[in-house]
Length: 379
Image (cartoon, rainbow, N blue to C red):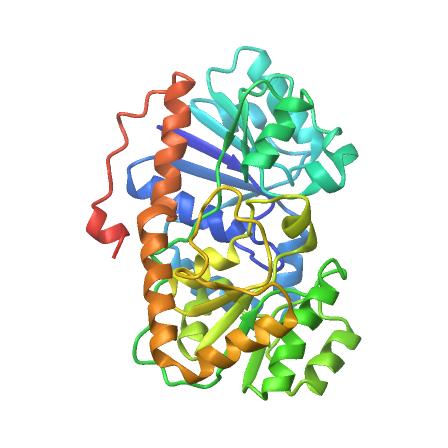
């Protein structure tokens, strides 16, 4: 089975969460015997920013060792030989950060007799927050949409953007995201996340900076796009700012801390119930105790109170973090239950099984792909 992905970037996770998930999916498909090719634009802003980071080049070299099956081909719209790329493909998946012109050209290739099945993959909140931007994409000849959550799937159908859509949640790549025993504790608290453009600034103050400051936790934060005022706020809260951290190094960083939090972006917490983002999947896979700011688990992905603690406001977040600091048994119980939930339901292997099921609905032959030994995937 030959599968072609078009994405913003497979190799760079600089402010680009889709790369986390895509690496796991590509690896899983390749392990099962699929011939996978990934195409990303030559001028992808995420890659350009990664290369501008100190240690960016070295991180790419390390990434190739961690993900030996993840390779991408960089293209320009002017020189891309789309006919050659699509020739012989069984399935083509186009991410919604792909240029609208290329989205249209691939659809036209399908309409002109392309034998492949063609899916559009939406992992963002623009369908709700900026629907006019999605209107630029011509999905007329696409066979369907892979939507990050049920609310997004229904939106595509209700607005007539597609005739067929499936819910395809993100998940953890447990080949990489797993506990790292033996690491020496360096912090009580670690958070890995980007500040961005103020779409969760108030939430970060309420659920992260405030509770950490009041408790006096030894804390560290990693991420990018922190404006000067955000860095000053971290300093005032006595939180160490570690800057950019390659995603594949996050498991070891989590292993050196006692707990972390999840602070969803505002659109996920308000307009997109059931879509938490990829970070809680990865944190739970690593076996670290997690407390989350509010979001509605409309699709029952987890069991709050057993997989993680939910805080309705900053005061409750402070109480939860204080309890975790003092109670090693509580930390262990949450970490173990959360990890078991990931292993049982939310790995990239599970998502590949779902994807192959969608393919069979579309008439794609998937028997050539073997199953990966469960003990290797769900260890």
